[in-house]
Image (cartoon, rainbow, N blue to C red):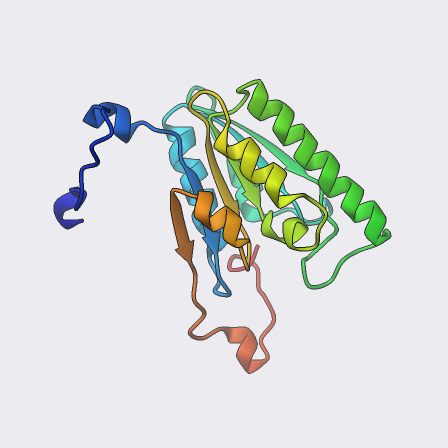
Length: 198
């Protein structure tokens, strides 16, 4: 894409403006760090454009307050709006209290709420943080996700984060970025730290 120009212009009958303004499904996946961070940056851009943002975190515990959540809550009124929901079971590698059935039910309930909001065209951007995990664990049906996102009404954008994105999700998406880990402080025994991981 030299100078921001697409390499191919499809013969789809759409104007450049119509094509530019199509709603997107975006996936940030891979074993590298930065998937959620990039999605929150996208949400900040959307807020600046006056968008209504819905953030849904699927495996972050409600007890953890991420720096991004605090920052979004401090944004001045007058631009977009941000709603933040946590329905998870703790960090993905160390699930917190509750049975697997409880966590599965929470994830299914969270997805059902997102489906209701998509049908009602409630948000301009949905950020489904670490949503690949409940899909991979079988808590949320991938075929239902693909059908819902493929047939969503209006001009609703969706960004999904998490490792090992299902191939059906990758096929559906308009934009897929794979974060590849080259090196990480945890490889040398260093735990996460404030301002970097949260």
